[in-house]
Image (cartoon, rainbow, N blue to C red; front, side, top):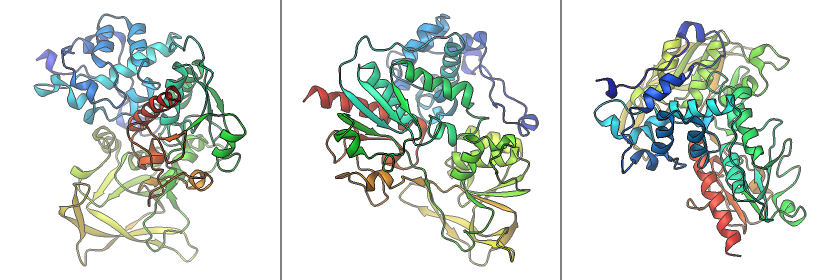
Amino acid sequence: MDGLVRVPISEQEPKVRATNFEEVCLGYTEEEAVKEAGRCLNCKNPKCVGGCPVSINIPAFIHEVKERNFEKAYQIISESSALPAVCGRVCPQETQCEGQCIRGIKGEAVAIGKLERFVADWARENGVKPTPAAQKNGHKVAVIGSGPSGLTCAGDLAKLGYDVTIFEALQKAGGVLVYGIPEFRLPKDKVVAAEVENVKSLGVKLETNVIIGKSITIDELMEEEGFEAVFIGSGAGLPRFMGIPGEQANGVFSANEFLTRSNLMKAYEDSDTPISRGKKVVVVGGGNVAMDAARTALRLGAEVHVVYRRSEAELPARAEEVHHAKEEGIQFDLLQNPVEILTDDKGWVTGVRVIKMELGEPDESGRRRPVEVEGSEYNIDCDTVIMSLGTSPNPLISSTTEGLEVNRRGCIVAEEVDGETSKAAVYAGGDAVTGAATVILAMGAGKAAAKGIDAYFKHQ
């Protein structure tokens, strides 16, 4: 039975971690990583690689871990991924690489994500960097946004010899990695900043506080600044709301605002940046961002309820995140949906009126459609509501770029295979194209666009 069960990984105790912002998962030791790597079957036809959006040579890096060649394992991962320490922490491996693992048919899948994290952390702690290009090719490319897709595209292009500059609107690089994902899941200084530095070590230049569409436009970058191609990886930071009564009340936040204040501005440290410290918080939504907002509010001292209109089986959040949230004491009010936010005479939130739901036939997403149960409304008392209903791209870039096509949702239209847009020499990928999705899918889009840009120059 030994080889069928994965090596367990240490975590903070739920009651302890619910009161701090330290990382929940503590990672493998060297001995644990080597033992877990020994479970890999080293398949001749490794399906795990096909399940990885950036096509890491998973059996090869795991073999090197097994042999204790940690530096070689890191270089193998770095050939495909610019952000291994990030991906090892936040990727939904259970539905991707680990979901395809042959070992998982009769036992537990190899802990690919935890091994990737171990290798990346070992490399950081031992000063190992990715290998830069031998020489530059003379072509100049601009990358808009320093989130997962932008960093990946920039890193891959730099390895191919391109002169790359990333333009970031905020004061810190990392995009959603720094403002969206909480510290207890993804440490900013220890992990994200180190991954950004690794990309810069490849020769990538980074300019922060540059808002494309205001500070400078894409057309100006190409016509006046000499950039021959542009990749748009600006993400999807425009929050969606329900349009129900009371949504403009004091005490209602988008998950974006709530997490940005906490993460990027470190409001959780009682800094000069204020953040809601409600005593009872309702988070509306069931995705990973909803879990992040709920678990952050809990750590700020609140009793937290997650209100979601479908059942637990349809929760889009990672099973691990839901499990951790439940362990920490977050309550799930499932098959319920807000119809109104209640307020006092001064406009402050006092509660949420919800209606019970039941599941009907599947909708276009394949999940059973929630249907209201007539006459089942009731109130949940609270003083803060956090809306986590997804996001769409900010229209600033598309509205200031001549000839750039967007769809009805405001997403940039781009070819899936290479990120090509309707505007010559302009490519796009990640959430700016798909709407809100996962870090690894954004990275896959950045990688595809880098190949597309390289092909564009080679065919000129």
